Image (cartoon, rainbow, N blue to C red; front, side):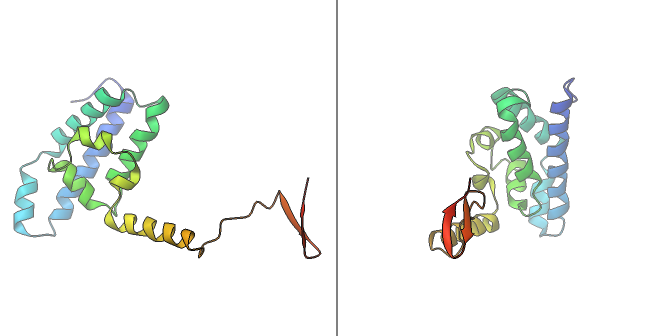
Length: 147
């Protein structure tokens, strides 16, 4: 079912491609998982997710565009097959998908771990924050303000 709004159709198409990817991904897994996924229609799930997103967030522009983009990125992310599968199977309802606050909540376990490690390294000083080279210049071993 197509909409007259091209941006809504694009969102629906991205979701559909992601959910079709789930079908391909589970074909490499056990028979039980394949049978579970076969019950769900990627076309209707993509349409219902887009419908809820549009009704809850409004048009794909302005302030909500970043939220749409974040959701689309995480649904398409090759490193995040579990997230796609949970949406397709209804474990994550469209309403919940919209209420997820950050992309970190949508991220795969691997990405969450990487983010956690980076925060730890910054906290313990293993990664130094970049110095603004425009405001500080090193001259003859002394620090002086540049103008």
